[in-house]
Image (cartoon, rainbow, N blue to C red; front, top):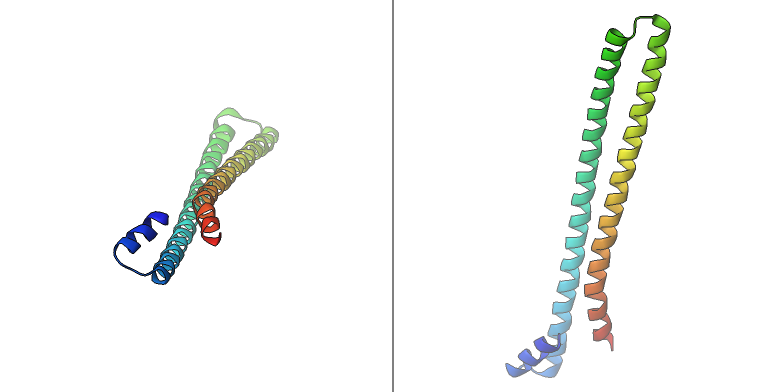
Length: 131
């Protein structure tokens, strides 16, 4: 901002105009940064939702195939079929929950890092302008 003010003064722009110009530029920069952060967060959320849906569909398909193969090929007795199905379904549910938790944690970390970087860039600039 100081560099911008010096350059504007060198061009013969008066001080009050320079200050107003700097504030307008700063406002535009803050608005652009906020818009970029919002777009990044929306894109990350959409990607996470798509990944979670794909993972859930894949796990469901794998569970159905595994249950079918195990029940038809390995198990012969009727009583054991129900136990195998229950075990496979429980394992599948645990896998889906773990994957969803990991994805949510990764998204939260990414959002926190992006917001932190933006804050580290914008906050010192805003504080220096207020002094």
